[in-house]
Length: 65
Image 1: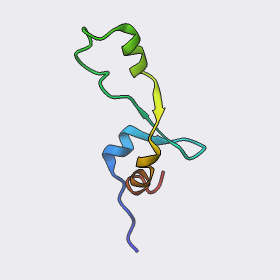
Image 2: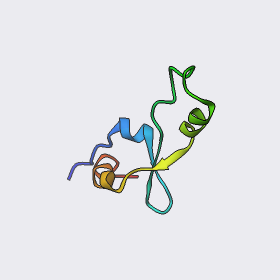
Image 3: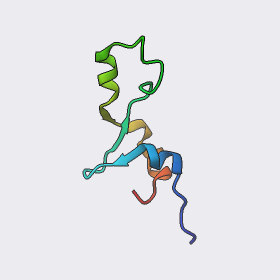
């Protein structure tokens, strides 16, 4: 069997934790920041667990994580 390819765009954005969950950073925190409140921008800096609904797709995209 040939090696499976990792989806590079997913690999740059998503990491697997020690417990096996996938972590990602929130979207919308990189531009047009003047109209966003400080509280909202602070929230964008926090990472969150990916949805369980996407877990099967993430395992295909990141086979060696």
